[in-house]
Amino acid sequence: MSLERTFGIVKPDAVAAGAIGGVIDLIEKSHLKIVGLRYLRMSLEQAQGFYAVHKARPFFGDLVKFMTSGPCVVMALEGENAVSKYREAMGATDSKKAAAGTIRAKYGT
Image (tube, rainbow, N blue to C red):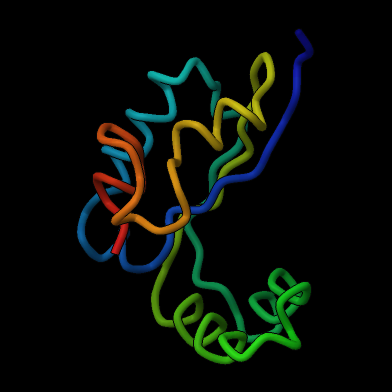
């Protein structure tokens, strides 16, 4: 096993729904430590830069608009095999297909 760090975001819809505490609870139950946390509103430039890998995709504009629509919480997470543990805690990208008890199943829209 290896100690890793990864990045997590509580997106604007979950922040607006009051789900920050619930998301953090599920992260901590996954045996991940939050080593940094910041509440912020992404600028257009930050969102475009962060999601630049998707720039050529048709959903890029909507994604950037969504991510700048309200505040979010960004986190640095640490733990043994943090990347795989966080992916497991998040669940499937499509929240309708995410396993019960995962972040996306519980809070995804």
